[in-house]
Amino acid sequence: MFLGRVMAMFALADRMSDSGAAGYLAAQGKDFGLTPTAIRYWSLRVQHISGVLKLGFELALAFIVIAVAVGLAATIWQAAHAARR
View 1 (spheres, rainbow, N blue to C red):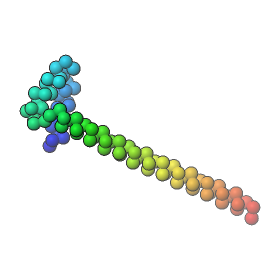
View 2: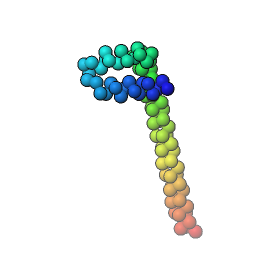
View 3: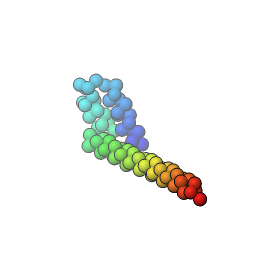
View 4: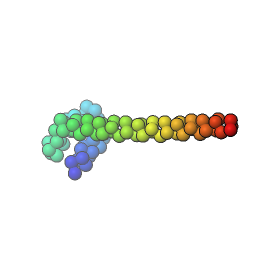
């Protein structure tokens, strides 16, 4: 519910011009019980979660690439040694 309110405020801020957006958001924030600090907190939290997820995906991709490289190296190794027999 709270996040929906924040998103609604950001949607309204996009429609406003830069000159009046700060005053408008301050007035709307009082109506919703939000403060600029709370909005910044949630923004930082979302950015942090996004960064953690990105790191997780990159680590998973790196693991997959390493696993494929090791498998390919093992296959080449076996093929090279099988030819000598």
